[in-house]
Length: 113
Length: 109
Image (tube, rainbow over all chains, first blue to last red; front, top):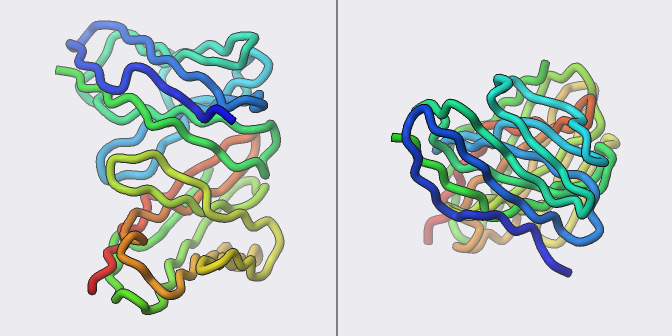
């Protein structure tokens, strides 16, 4: 069973730039969720994708967008980067349904300077 | 909206028992999760409760009271490797899982 993998592991960008983060789901999982985790905080829900459509969104502006592909892999895109976007971005895959545990990747550490 | 509260930090002794509490207020409820997160690593699933009562899984147990909006995670026979952050998370409407800020547990010899 292949777990959730994310790339890249670390990234440094400049304010105003755009970034794309990638995630491969655990085999058999059809739902992908993205979270932002600031240092010392819990993960904050960005959005979730199911069947290639956004299936729920947290309190994040439209410059945070995503995609899910037919093989259930996913991308998180962030435009017009701000300093406060510096955080660990976690991808989690699961089966659909509110009772399915999330399986997290190791995250991408984004630093915006 | 969702609001989840848990203590920021706790310290306990190796071999002892520790209880980490979590209170929540949500607009929808599909269950409550506990995750463990070691420093610099991803969260890993520990437990899930959707009905009132205690769920036991080895050294770890989790309790839920839906009427009180309350849960706790009980860790027995603490080991040094249990030093980590413990995240309480509630599954609400629209498949959204909301996490608390986490409780950083330090196990001391």
